[in-house]
Image (tube, rainbow, N blue to C red):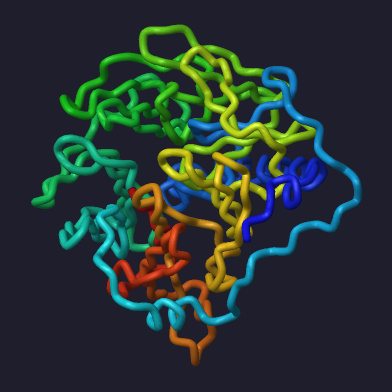
Length: 386
């Protein structure tokens, strides 16, 4: 039986604040590593300023309930398995291939379609009317990147480059609008359909990796970065500097720790609308597209309508620790089971090739099935599903 949110979600302030500080360090490392690191790790589980649609706010903007600190036992993680991810995936029944697009081993996959990509490394940003917006990178004979570009690849494999940023903006700004029509690169605002530059970003835009319905969300380059929301044609809006922000893998859920973590909707004017009024102790991982379910990092499922919490059992420990999921619809999410043959260990050679199988899981049935055949990943591959 589902337990109430109050039974499982306690204050969590110290844990959440510690996690935010750690993620600030991760963000710094990502910025230092530059464009190559972002191509390979564009959907890192927690990056301090990636764009989100739903946030958690502190009491300065949205009234928050006080967390119950009565010493109740901490919730136990949901049951997981020590089974190797690939062995687990191979044991599951075969389902239909996922319709989400992804890049693996230099090839873009979308349903039954396979499109070879140019270059030596690549990353996926999303779809547009002509195909998919991707980043490609070319290496020299020593494996060092020497050239790269963003562009649109069509289903027949044709690649058309977007114009580079002529304004010398920050290379940490790379974000595609939700409708796939506008791309922010550095300080250039590019029309993806016409492949032309149509505007400029604010001067202080230093880091942004996503674009949501409310607008482009970025931070500036200061000792204590401020968070800003911007839409083309308008002035940037500075968001509350006192809030601590975290971002989930879906790019839709944002949380803040200020004594309590709470889900709220970020509006285009910078205001916040509560979605789920209770404090959340479990670290959120991803909100379903329609907001019905919130999956936590220990794979508990929170039903946002009533706050009930149930574990999602049977997922291998390594998949849970990795903390990446992608939603197909309101009920189904995809995880990637990766590794080598079980006789060589679950991870195998850390710099060598791995194999992967995509697995579809259902919130309503708590059952999983295979959503792809087994395919190979190179050492640099970091799956993006869109």
